[in-house]
Image 1 (cartoon, rainbow, N blue to C red):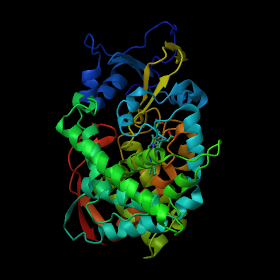
Image 2 (spheres, helix red, strand yellow; image 1 turned 135 degrees about the horizontal axis):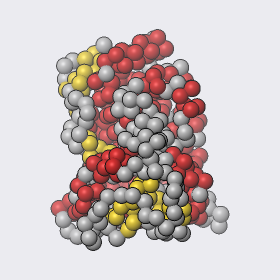
Image 3 (tube, rainbow, N blue to C red; image 1 turned 135 degrees about the vertical axis):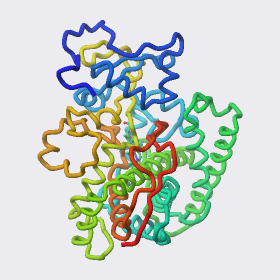
Image 4 (cartoon, helix red, strand yellow; image 1 turned 90 degrees about the vertical axis):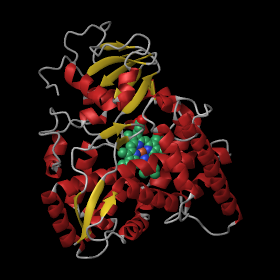
Length: 457
Ligand code: HEM
């Protein structure tokens, strides 16, 4: 990776210059190599052009990779109003839920974000801690000594169960639920990892047909949950109850379609990302026995055999560092996209409206300007002093600015409680060795199943 001295940055740049970058094929530009192997594409852009602004061609759009934390802060925070999240996301998820928080823009987004924020206040999130621990304990109770557990299968089930319970107050645990099946069919369709993943849903490929069927079944289940709610006189305290009581400025509420789009957004934005964070964390611990032993010691001293709680997380300092370091090395959201609404200047370069900006955590989190031995799993690096010295936006697993992840607190609490619950009971040994073979799809996913071998402590 390039160092400070070698980067071109803004030095000597004229606004009309085109930033350095890879040559593409005529017409398709760099789209094919990006789709075939985004990881290699980002590495090529980061290593070979020695610039914090790298240009390329994606479809018919100009693409730019930004890797200087100051430019990332400029786009996500300081000048956020000059950007939209952009078509690259709309063209995919927008086919299924174009009204959810992830895809709304401007005033419509602002109203909805404001209305939903109370569902993510600290007190409310903390009230979910018991469910999170209970589900992590029950979900891993049947692990047997010497068994190879496939994290890539078990973690998405766990996180979806937790979300369904906390957001909708429905138990899907242990059964083959419509929501679980829909989640799989929809992620499969978008994760085909090839051009076909970008074919519109009306093209009747087998993956599209499965996805459409799953969406219909998902809609039917959600409609059922909403109808039951209307007939029930029980008090609910979940995201659905907040969505149903939202009052917009004109006094109206959200339509059933808007509620459905929001639930869809939350289930999908929240379950796979958190499952990946858990998968990577367990795999890193299994492959780093000394770090795992240090975590065991902390859990034994602080918890003394009791279950972890929201309050105990304040004392579990090393656990927090383990999760932070795992999200640095393997950020489930591996890049943030934005599109400028008008022509803008970044790093001295003129960038046209409608260009696609990619700010890859994958590259920035492993930049040796900010991290010594960046590829090493070293939770100890997260001292207060280190954090104070780290530029803002050299670490941003949950994005930044007004559109940062609304589920951040939820995800961090769930991840820490699940890691604590498992590590308290089991020692993990590597089933799958590092480095992992990864594929960048909607999220950063392992290309193959990831296993750990478990042994009761
Ligand atoms: C480790 C787990 C997670 C990671 C790494 C993650 C990452 C992110 C990132 C990077 C963004 C910002 C994207 C952008 O700026 O373009 C985002 C947005 C979002 N996330 Fe998460 N997320 C996680 C868990 C969750 C959970 C648990 C939920 C819901 C319960 C959730 C719901 C959302 C929503 C609704 C947005 C859009 C927010 C808006 O535009 O206002 N995420 N997430």
